Image (cartoon, rainbow over all chains, first blue to last red; front, side, top):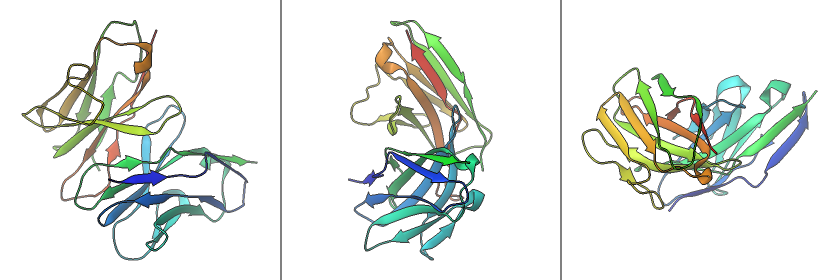
Length: 113
Length: 115
């Protein structure tokens, strides 16, 4: 079985401040980890992924995420948030040998000007 | 990456009726999936659409309620049958491009409201 936990329903930050969205996971095999963003009335957009290699991965729009195997975490970060980053963020995981994605509950990010 | 077109983008339907959602991809893909996102909830996998054979449904989802077709490698449909207000959700088509990427790509989704 696999699962994802996003412990925060909402994250509020001021523009220009660092943004962190937390994610922890559970999977039986090797994890493939993903972050997606959903803007209002839009589909899901892929941000970044961890498959193997460097634990720090960089993605779209200045986002990055750090894979921590010992803590089974994959937190999303952005050094300087923009108002346009306000959206719903989903962390997802699947086993490397499987195709089924499991999603977290989502975290609503609000960046105030 | 493949481009996914989903129709309709939104609909308001009467309870007891059925709605068929179409998903068209601009290239041949190995795997296509259907997800549901209920209001304020995360995404839940409904089924895997298999080309040329019956779909594989996840626990809690049945073929009579959510019949799926996949006649070829670029097209799939999901029907929501005998709808009730509890079926009001966003339905998303997604795919994986075998051998080229590991992430899933999503269509824009269909926002369904059942009244």
